[in-house]
Image (cartoon, rainbow, N blue to C red; front, side, top):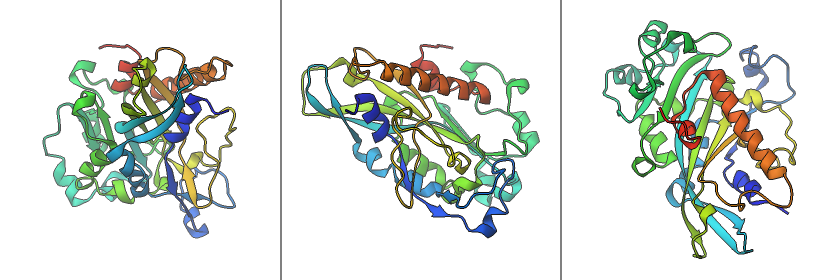
Length: 308
């Protein structure tokens, strides 16, 4: 029987159309990111990833759950982009367009951070991942571009309240005019360090029942964006949320998870400790990932009760 946690992870896993990379193109890949030959290498285009969020951004995504008193409920969540970092193998001046260059002087929203690729000196002069409330720029903690990590093309960290945010698809599309390669980049162009975090906030449930505390729970899912992870084997039992592979489709199951207002036992099965272990494992993975990148993720800190 599928647990509520597995149902959530399954429903919040993006599934996008895939294409097979020709052999001639494979020879051009960064060997640090793709050190071995493969019979087949599938990839997706970022535009298709954002498109997969169109419907859920407009109407929410329904997650079938079973309450403690055995009521079957469909809880709807709306996705919001919480954080994203995109690293590529191309040098900054090769990726940047005239629009992106001109936009560097534009005033940015003070409640959040976004950045396009810049020269190394420009990156050293400012660090958009650090807000005034998080302290001054620390060069020692900044991940400088290099051959292994790639060049930072774009990043965004949301810090506004949930009520002031645009749904994920709308927010990403608002960046496209300034950063058009958010639509054209392929997963094979991205460094293994590329990732995004999606915040899922509950909006309503069907049928309408008495207030259930756990239906107010918010979730934060972490997803890798690079094809360099596609050859990793996932055990369905150990990785709830991993959908069976479909032909010409790629799924991006959460590798990390954080929760907010998790009360009661509705999201954690009381019949076994699998859900608890899964939750702890995903939380630990998210925490480790952020520490490896030396990233201060505002939503993660807030979910964890860390206030700066």
